[in-house]
Structure formats: structure tokens, C-alpha cells
Length: 110
Image 1 (cartoon, rainbow, N blue to C red):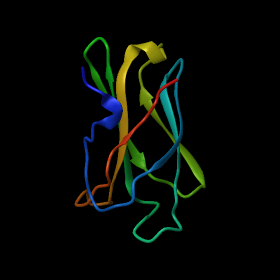
Image 2: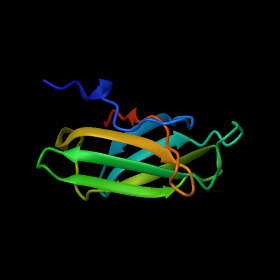
Image 3: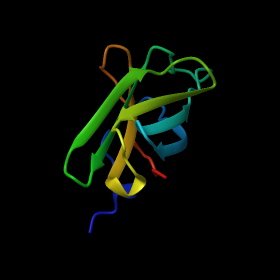
């Protein structure tokens, strides 16, 4: 049996995201994270990559810029999803040109 919370799917030198919440809802999975733009090597133009593996076998991916508000959210589109439909969910950061990444973070979806 795989323990997805211990699996690392991305590795890199950029600081990883701090996740506040992961919530399954009517439009998909909303992940709220701290932007931490005051930290060295963290830019509001970095890309947040989030994805979820669903029980039906599909992989759903979303990307957006990190943003500059203290807290931001990214939506993984999956209409009608419930937390029990999610096998695992992760986020990681890419810098603007995609040449550097952060370590992945497992997201507990509620």
C-alpha cells in the first residue's frame, strides 16, 4: 500500500509552499496557500502547480502564478468532487521560466 503523504513527486531548491487548506467542493479542489513573497528566491511570478489523482483514474492539473497577497488559492477543476474521490493531491512551485522547482507538498483534501 502506498503512503501518499510520504511520496515526493517534485524536488528542487526553491522554498516549498505552506498549505493552509485543501477543500473539495462543487467546482473542484481549492487549495489555499501562503505566498511567502518576503522570503529570498520567492517571487509573485513563480508558478504554482497543483494536481490530484482521482479514484476514477484521472489526473487533474492546474497552474497559476503564485500571487502577492498573504494568502492565495488555486482551484483544481473537478466539478462535483468529494474528498473521498481523491487518491492524492500535491502542489509544488516552478520559477517563472520553469528551470527550478520546489519540493512537492502533499495536500490533505477535506
